[in-house]
Length: 368
Image 1 (tube, helix red, strand yellow):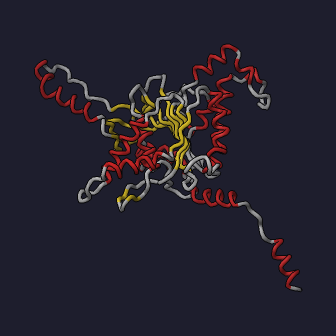
Image 2 (image 1 turned 60 degrees about the vertical axis):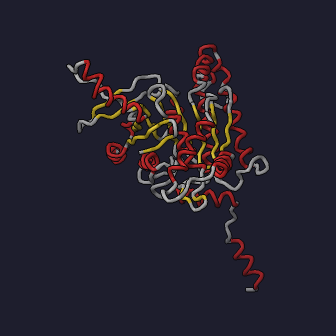
């Protein structure tokens, strides 16, 4: 056989694969490993890994998790926790030989309530950086600190749609924006998360459309007749479809916040343990899309004991209660709604590891 014929035969055996397909395959193989870093907050990643491990999902259907942080009441700390996650993902791993344990990545954030505070985020990042400084290391100069924070925030891409229709349109076009290296300076960073602050922001507007007949505008491609699908449900289907595309392109988790409309209740397991249940008011397409919901609530302050005198209340008891309030403690628990569909191994791990605490004060946020 001539060298030319041999070369032709060998060339036929070569599998042609686009570079983006190769990278996606490599990322998929990495995601099959256990103990993935999704948020760079160990307490949260530990819970996510319970639900996303290959053992629990053999078909890898949920390799890019969807995390919902839901507040059981106003001022539950969910947005503050989101700020903390952002700080851990944006900051570099090392800066001037200081171990910041950051991910040095970019983030896509949809601020649906238009109340995301960059000033508060700056304060939280500042406090986190200072907490990483060893005692023997002098504080960073103000200009150096400001430069580090500013350079990190350049990689937080914030979008503020004003309606669900605008949100869908933005989702549809954001991929093109992120992949355009001329549009921003994050070309040398991976996208670590797609975040949605207030995923329930437009639900009431969309449900009014249900009442007013807005569902009649559902796309004809649906398997059901347009009039049989509520507008709010179809809108969330569109949102999820675009989010899945972003997850597929960038291999990222989706992290969203929401507010509860129902009261938090507790269910007794067979072993006597109480677990929290907080019903979701969002449409079924979203509830089925979410991998895990984490309930955020302020740590309960111990009530006064029965029979305590007024003097005792004004003294030791009142001081203890005030101290608890000033600590700004919050607790996070896995929502057990829908847990009947969990595997027993998941239920067992969540019973033992399905929660953590964090604090929120003027200077910043800390987990643990």
